[in-house]
Length: 370
Image (cartoon, rainbow, N blue to C red; front, side, top):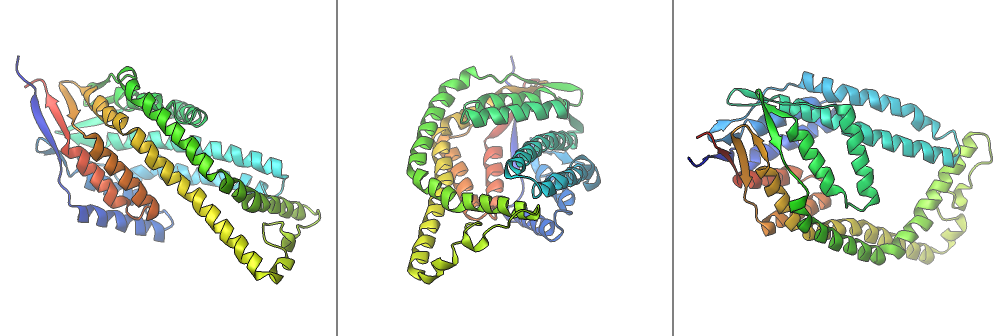
């Protein structure tokens, strides 16, 4: 029996060219209030896929901004318009009703995000081809939306315990319904070989979350009682004033603003402000600390997941393997996240390029027909 032929994968794009393009697109999106986004995404997709080579043959991307707009941009504008009316109503009803409207809006936004995400993924894959054969992704965006929404809420209520099964479902959705020409892909991913890596990592990450909560609990309660709760109360009083009821006591602290009598004691005001800043810093720092700890606990699982996914997706006589180290993957993921967090995502083009280059260098495609 002949050994499978190895088809090496490479990404032939300089970091300067990719980062420069990404920054240029971001600035144009900013200056045009998002109107340039379909054109920008099309430029980035072309720059990305046309520079990925498998055994010397580049992928091709044939998408255009007009088609992408019909899939994602125009529906997003229509959905945004539908959210405006409930947002206005929030200022005309009681606090409880306003909160209920806000929660309903949040659920709708998340659902629409998943719906649009499936359509964008489906469109993106349909515009990619290799060696003259196009890719096609089948499936229902509406069905995918409800499944994604269910998994998201399940992950929220279980502190991420169901994230493995969500990943499995997403892999089966994306690759189980994928065609290369007329050949349908096979996706045989399963939870069993991954549980021994995922469960211990999830347990330790959850313990870390509890410890972080103990660390910031006092500050979190202080931020809520002294800052957020007064603001919510003040907004409620303003809404009541708009409805003809007595107006909020603005200077008496209805909006979380100290009363006029507090201005007579500058030292007390300075101490209060310092305490609030320290509390906000602690609460804000808790999230990146938790994410770093979580990435550390799940680093082995993440590496095994990439290997498992690559090995269990097959298109005809083609299948893939990826050789990724646990330490290097953890370092790349952690540094990328924290740098992006500190720099407010200004460094995302560089970290995205680093991740693409890292993965393509470790990915090979095997052709068993050789």
